[in-house]
Length: 173
Ligand SMILES: [Cu+2]
Image 1: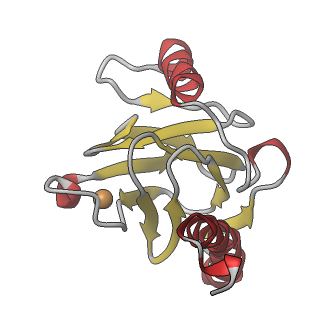
Image 2: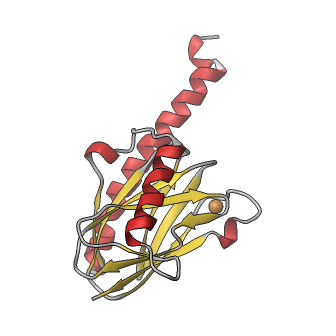
């Protein structure tokens, strides 16, 4: 029996593999979506990299501040160009649930799972998906080139309310 088969070692290897999986799957999918001409996308780098871990209350503070600054009467948020967009995933909702972006502008969408593993898929023509490990922000850079609605869905079964876990991004001028 080698030390490599110890349960703790196995667990961390699996987590590491999952982290690489996230980065790799985003990188793989980017050219596909870009080729469709709907969204230019790019994997995030720097301070929102896939290996960064953040406390749930720190991410929640960003979501709260975003609502304070850009919140609309209906509870949606309208994000100005050049501003990061923070989306919290938790059983069983994405917060904020409705996000307004400007067509032709580049945004970093920063997703964060607060409780269990979730996933996010952005669907507009094609789709772009990423796994969300609890506590690890994942950044997806998008530049929506067409007006319309990008549907967001959770892609990892996360419990009884999983199928209701949806949100949307509207792209306008
Ligand atoms: Cu889910």
